Image (cartoon, rainbow, N blue to C red):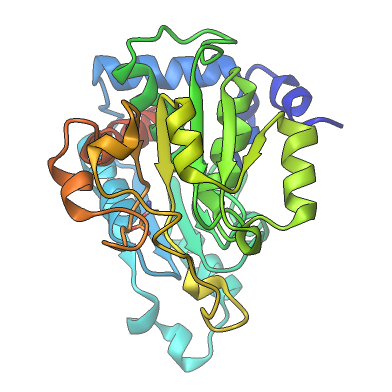
Length: 317
Ligand code: CP
């Protein structure tokens, strides 16, 4: 069954299931509703609800963004710190969740380094608890894709409709093989009509991935960043090399001469996005990321708080 069909199966899929594990778990109508809440900035929920961040893998943006969002909404905000917890006394992660549930939890953001593990852990919460996947291995990062979409619509002044990205050419460049952000964005943005070009050296875009993305999501494949930028993109999304997901211990690397952007001239008018963390001078220069008018990177971070607040309000308000 094609993903786009799954995504349209139920117009209230997230409201009913309360589990945002993948971008397939939110219907188009629900995205529109969440974006309306984000724009109106009306985030307050009824008092007495508890949010827990449960991050088994490191994070700066997503962790603090979720916690700021939960505070804005009016949750009691708790952070579970694995290193300071009874996990180090060999308590299992599943029994940890049983303990959290006994205390009472209305919403929980989970990050894990293992693909598919958030979906498994979600089964141990009650059906009423809202679960938001804050990134699982190389699988999915749905709130990142939603905040990226919101940032694109805002920057290009596009009204959200079912095919609203059809005029946009979006390049996704870098370690596509290991990137959950790439997976979520390819699925979400192509569903809304975006023309997506995947740009990577062959070791980060093996033939089975390449064929899958071409067939399922109409992606174009490029091994030449300079030529793709010269031909014209509206947006270039950069990804860092995800060393932590490589069995080879991070030996695969970029040729940063070929798969890196350093100046506005190279962009040829394209806006630049990056989910972070940035590896400066590998896939992007620091000045381009943080000083250029072409960069939407700080806006992505700012919008992350609004989108996560809106999701929490949508689920728990
Ligand atoms: N974009 C993102 O997931 O960044 P963090 O790993 O810092 O949360």
